[in-house]
Length: 429
Image (cartoon, rainbow, N blue to C red; front, side):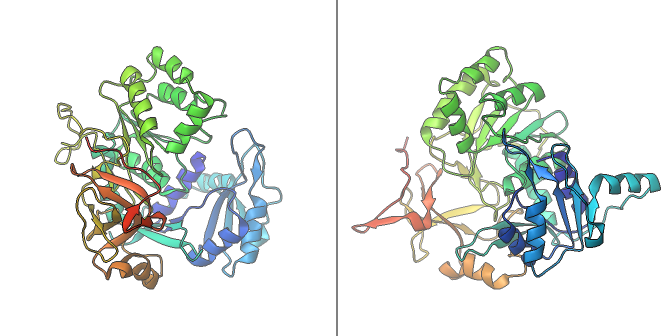
């Protein structure tokens, strides 16, 4: 999670090529799997990764072993040398190159690659998500829909409209969340993005997020419930948040967005109270739900629900919908969310079932898997005979239209003809 990772990704997009990002320190066998699946011509890497207070982790052994294991051999490996731990003996004969030296050489020679136009249906990136067979599924994102959908969602849902606004997405570009809201969406709208290498605790303490918000005047924070649980564990009285809040350091924060797993109502309620006391006027904690396949939130509560026609509107008189702790909000534009039984028939409001999507999807939604149309059909369409896209999640839509994502569909327990999930929905209000 260094600037070079974003710069390299944007450079690939500028060339009209497709990128596939994986996490730092990826196991060689898994990395080899992805190399064989996507067949890259170049690997971009740092010399090491830093994980909290642990010593730097050398990436050279992972990458060299992965290339040895894979059938496909990338022509080049370009290495960003980090000062904390360098990649020793760059092997030029086997295609290894020093990133910084390449940049210096190109600058001296006045070389600059032109921006390559692409069709709206051309691929931007592949993001791998684990499959039930253990083989990764390569979700392919397309250029036109990706740009249009993110440009809408960053404004409509997240309240980030352009220059002067600051987005802090505390994720990793190995996740789809990082692709969408660390990298592309803020920059598409002209806003600033905060790139953070570290953990919510231990780098150096449980006040890290709150100090970043204060220092960079962050307007929207996007993180996972797991991060807030870790902070609560280390600072159960919220002393560090209150310390920053009492000096006005959180007054720019309009919202805290949560995604990646189900948020228990207690954590939403706790942070909602804290934001009311220390955040911007009307600040909210908003749960949202989406996936690698959707590319942007399927559901949530829009901060600027009236911005569909004028995304840069300064009118803030329209209040967002109410928050229901335990719910992932309402369907976002372009996503038609339904609850069906195992035969694909829609069920009544308030009843548990399979969460599916009607077609077509919103612009950011995938249309295929990378070079595997058959698996795309079998994995997402076959179960309901092409009528619905199967999300693999289970839950319900309540009487007010709020979506409650309770568990993965295969976690549903059938007891005496009743369906129970591993999560528990809140009572209707």
